[in-house]
Amino acid sequence: MNINVNKSKETILVTGGTGFIGSHTVVLLIENGYNVCILDNLSNSKIQVLDRIRTITNLDKNDERLKFYKGDILDKIILNKIFKENKIFGVIHFAGLKAVGESCIIPLKYYDNNISGTVNLLEVMKENNVKNIIFSSSATVYGEQSVQPIKEDAKLNEPTNPYGKTKLFIEYILKDLYSSDNTWNIVLLRYFNPIGAHKSGLIGEDPNGIPNNLMPYVTQVAIGKRSHLNVFGNDYDTPDGTGVRDYIHVCDLARGHVYALGRLFGNHGLDIYNLGTGHGYSVLDIVKTFSKVNNINIPYEITSRRSGDIATCYADPSKAYQEMGFKCELTLEDMCRDSWNYQKKNPNGIE
Ligand code: NAD
Ligand code: UD1
Image (tube, rainbow, N blue to C red; front, side, top):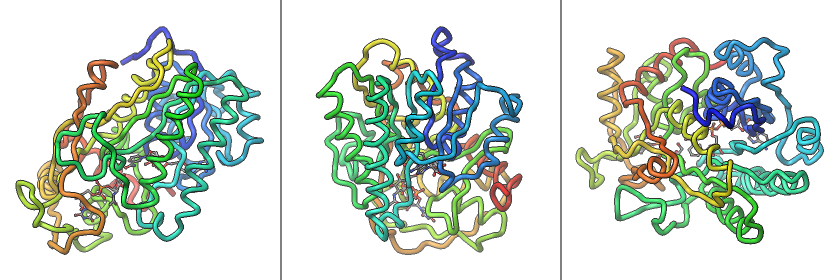
């Protein structure tokens, strides 16, 4: 697959490029002919991911198509150094802290890292006259919606936690920036629930400690690290009473970014897209599908609802298809198979 075939050879700065979604996107960027500079402070990823990206993409260590800078988006010196040393066309901005529970305990850290970090990045981009950016937003900005599937023009609701608020505030910041100077090209991508891993099993999601999210918890039950899954409530107004979400394979999500890059060429202004499949699956659908495709029993217990959870959230993905030609290709079976493949090959994460 080669997307934006005439536009490749440009250099993209990928902040947070050794993380879960960033690493899969970097692989696809390289496979599509882009040059990549990663900036990551390794606060939630490992340096070994770089070698794994090189293995998947057949790059040797000295290949200039992939450069790595260890550093922080809060540090203007390293940001300026990257812009001076490379002819950056645009930025895909993944760097951020993302643990919902932790964000309630250390909100200032989240506001500083995610919001001040983004403002810092935007200032340095402006100084260097690079005005193309794709930002990792989240379906969390929709909050609870009575109408499903959710369209991009739905009224946004205030998220219940500081993490979600950072996403909403950054969307506002980017909208204000665009209003003040419409020579910027900005794409806000609202991700639904990314799961799965690269087919090779070399890169995937490596949560710290006890996983908060469903799929990493399920794979840790499968590998015997946890005795059973706690299903947070079966009294929601959904077909089987458990929460319904739109799970998207991380490789589809990564591909969405390569399509979104197409919007940065030419003057499209500010665009907002949902990245989801348009299908809602319940917690028990995930348990059943995972068990079936991998032939592993997942013991579970129904417990009380988790505070802040909503019943149902799934995307209307038609805008991304109509305007960018992007749609998801991988199924829930693929997601369950690839998540398990990664967990099996990396029982203790990347070591
Ligand atoms: P991740 O934690 O795996 O990756 C984020 C990367 O950013 C990590 O490698 C981390 O070390 C780096 N980082 C964090 N703060 C930094 C800083 N100040 N300077 C430099 N590097 C920094 O997370 P992910 O799942 O790949 O998510 C990527 C982005 O997508 C995040 O902004 C996240 O909020 C957003 N998002 C994720 C999900 C999800 O379910 N994974 C859903 C919606 C939105
Ligand atoms: C969560 C975050 C959201 C963030 C997203 C990133 C909360 C309240 N929301 O969304 O802000 O953008 O992750 O992926 O944390 N579940 C269980 N047992 C578990 C774990 C989850 O039953 O051990 C259920 C949840 O109740 C939910 C579904 O599984 O119905 C999915 O949960 P999760 O993977 O945490 O994602 P979200 O809650 O959608």
